[in-house]
Image (cartoon, rainbow, N blue to C red; front, side, top):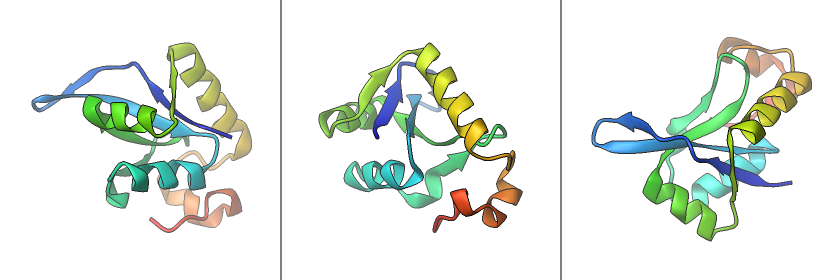
Amino acid sequence: MAVYVDNYQAKYRNMKMCHMLADTIEELHTMADKIGLKRKWFQISNGGTPHYDISLSKRLEAINNGAIEIDRYKVVELIRFWRTQCKCFGVSHLPDCPKHIVSI
């Protein structure tokens, strides 16, 4: 099990942002807590992939705390993994899915 950060660099205000993903929601939240992310920043994309959008400085903190740097191919692999884990494609369905029961 692992936490991952991609090398995507989207502009958001005066920052560049990337994604932090994980094999489990618990691991994702644990890393988020370690690097000081607020739980309200947790997201689940329309495809059902749990993640955080993080700044490049938080990306470095995550790497220093054990996150694995990944490329876009691994991101696609993780998206496919989450899609096979649950057919709840959308935030509104997540509370009903036992695989996505988390405290947000």
